[in-house]
Image (cartoon, rainbow, N blue to C red; front, side, top):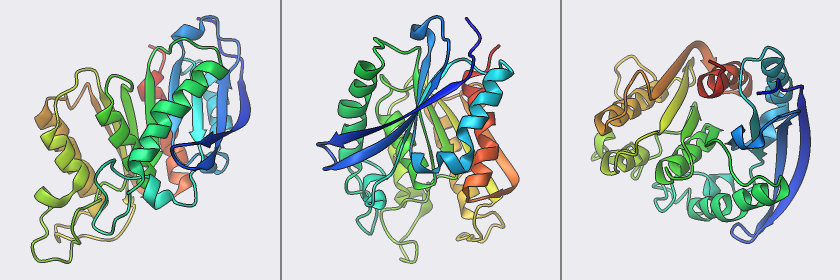
Amino acid sequence: MTKVSGVLVENAVIKSRELGRAVKLDFYLPRNVADPSQMSLLLINDGQNMEELGFEALLEKLYAGEAIEPLLCAAIHCGEDRRMEYGVAGKPDYLGRGAKAGAYTAFILEELLPYIKTTYRLSSFKEKAFAGFSLGGLSALDIVWNHPSVFKKAGVFSASLWWRSIDQTEKEYDDDKHRIIHQQIRKGDFYPGLKFFLQCGNKDETMDRNHNGVIDSIDDTLDLIKELVKKGYDKEKDIQYLEMPEGRHDVPTWGLAMPEFLKWGWGKK
């Protein structure tokens, strides 16, 4: 494959019927790809943060070092109703947040993917992946898990895996029963070929609801990995866990983790 000679950034707006709003997008295209059919597609939630994350420069450096295969990256800017559009489709949390997650999923599948195919005249991709941060990470994981015929990899950065069906202050609250995405994976089927990258930082938060000395975000992530392993995924081959000792719940931390994700997913062998 011809060496990628840089990154071209293009901006676009899609008027979404599903969401009833205009969706801003930034596309990061690798230059000088000999065989576009061998290029993968990466969708990224909270695309409005890519400039702060330094995504273009990060890609340029990886391509210059021939560290990753070509990726067409689509950074999707969130809307004003982010807490409604992100989440788990069909299962809002105990406060009703995520009620539009189904519409957001429909936007991805029925509007964005056809738009990319038509705009960039690509009949297919080598594979498709979805990544996100915080609540956007939960959204990306939910979409990948429920559409394994479309997506093969999930990038989950400091995700809101605590998303729950009842308030944790309720006396009947139980981690094993009320964390929505954990339940979805537990009750779902095994989909061969799916792979998961999960990142968390030791300074992501300070909450420790079960008082075990481990912050909730790490507990939730490790418990999710346990559910994936129980479902049949290989902890070494299918799952990559990155725990960052100084990692915080912020864009700079995710910027440091992003190269590890990209090399894990599309590193040149």
